[in-house]
Image (cartoon, helix red, strand yellow):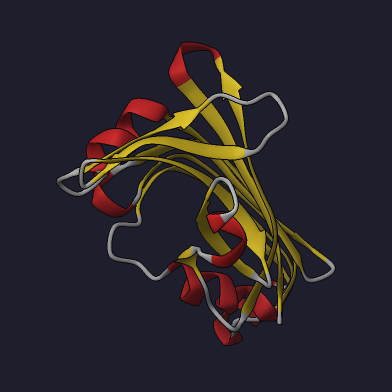
Length: 170
């Protein structure tokens, strides 16, 4: 890890921080708290080879950058891992879309569903496709300290997806 000026990290402040990490266990860690702690850092560049996230989902090639208060993140997810991490009676799979839209299709409690995951009003929500989606949505991520502007998933070979997000600290 490199920081400038390095001593400033003791007070959670620095002009620039770079970190390269082989692996990181993030299960049980509050993502919003971790992101909010970057408030005192001007520029951030973190690369992690593999992250074990909630419910044992593994993310590869994780990158987090911060420039001018804007956070951008990218990670690679195996679509099968997401499906295995869901609770009983929830069977959803990422649907490959070239336009970057995050689409999930499958069954919840026996009912067939298609969900679109979007950034709206600073939150990440999953909403049903069709007319109901205009009125209904399930919050996936919401924190008043973080204003999510964009989320996307681009299909990669082998059933993997490049996930990305952009947000601002508020």
